[in-house]
Image (cartoon, rainbow, N blue to C red):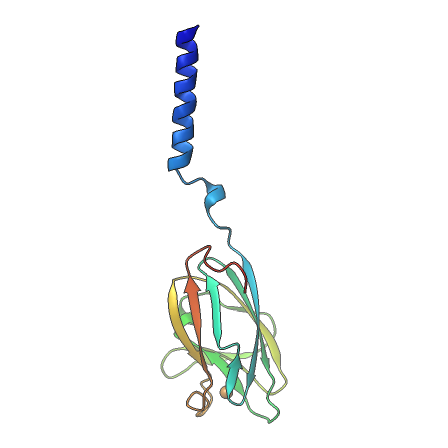
Amino acid sequence: MFKARAVLVASLAAAVTLTAVGVSPAQQPAPTRRVFNVSMTSWKFVPEIIQFNEGDTVVINLSNDDTLPRNHDITSAFFNHVDVKTVAPMRTGKTDEGRPFFRLGRGEKATMEFVARGRGTTAFLCSVFDHATRGMTGAFNVTAPGTMIHN
Ligand SMILES: [Cu+2]
């Protein structure tokens, strides 16, 4: 009887140790769907820093809120590494440098959605005329899963 109990206790201890050492799926931070409302005007993006975690589904509600009839876009090498889906019609293409852009006329709105891949900071800018040099720049900051809790 004592022997059987000792074996049982030893088995439980081993099981507990394995659980503590191994990373169970429950300990992995769950991917999150994050929504950002990004406004474009002359000459800025608001917000200009967009932070999310690798693996998150990122939704960007992009809006051209300019009071003057100017096109604006969001352009970034980051878009080369993710599969961007657009919900509303918007002009897309690639700049001469090979960066995908997503462009809206004054008063237009559209939604972009992608799953974040890769970590680190990648600049974005407006590729229309000289808008970037006038200040239309920003950055995507992709952090490790679990880093960003809220946005
Ligand atoms: Cu612009």
